[in-house]
Length: 184
Image 1: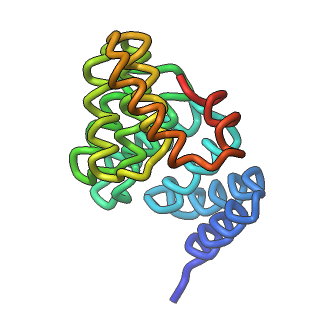
Image 2: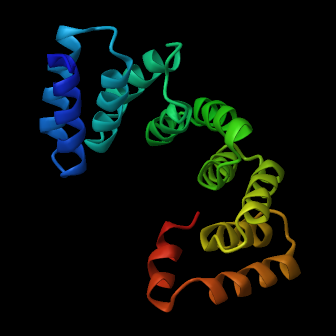
């Protein structure tokens, strides 16, 4: 039997999926006013806040969720993304490392590589991006960012050339321009 808090949580999730993050925040806050210990609603509120680019609010919610015994498994990943938006590189590294250790998530490893560039740890960035490629050999963004790191910071031009070529083989032509804009 669903409670009002559960119904409001489900409504918030639907609103979030329907590109209505402000409405989702309102529904999820109402759910939490009924049940302040409702971890799932707090998690979803953190995601909605992140969607609205309310970074500090998202961090506060997701940090509280991370301390709960029933926290969703990907809380550390989303918390890491929130820290990235806040330019809190060390905290992002910590959260994403925690998540990547337990999941071997390609996306988390890719984000870790980019965070490590911000921390000026180019060897760690190289290691994370190389691991992402090991796990998902068709993940084009990792090749592009690995090549940039090799060329720019590690002066490994032959490796960079090979990774640029692999990226160009994998990425559809229409994505090249957008990917380059999103690269380091």
